[in-house]
Image 1 (spheres, one colour):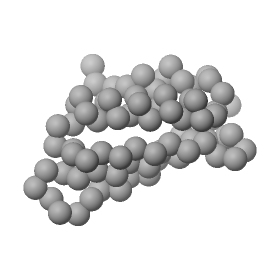
Image 2 (cartoon, rainbow, N blue to C red):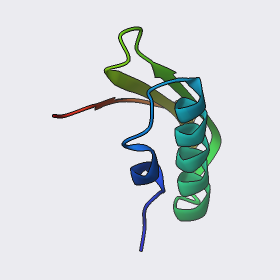
Image 3 (cartoon, rainbow, N blue to C red):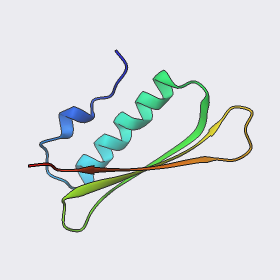
Length: 78
C-alpha cells in the first residue's frame, strides 16, 4: 500500500501540532515511495480560521534543473 498516515490527523484540531504531524507524514511518504524526488521541502500552514491546511511541497527530480512546486489545500468537509 502506498500512502501516508494523514488520515490519522483528519479529526484533530487544525493547529501547529497537526501541521507538524502532516509535514512528517508527507516527508516520509515522499522519501519512501518516490526515489526520484530529491531535496524535498515540505511546509504545512494552518489557516487563520482553522478551516483548512495549505501544504507546499518543493522538490527536484533527479537530472532536472528546475524545481517542482506543488501546493495542496486540505479542507474540512462537513
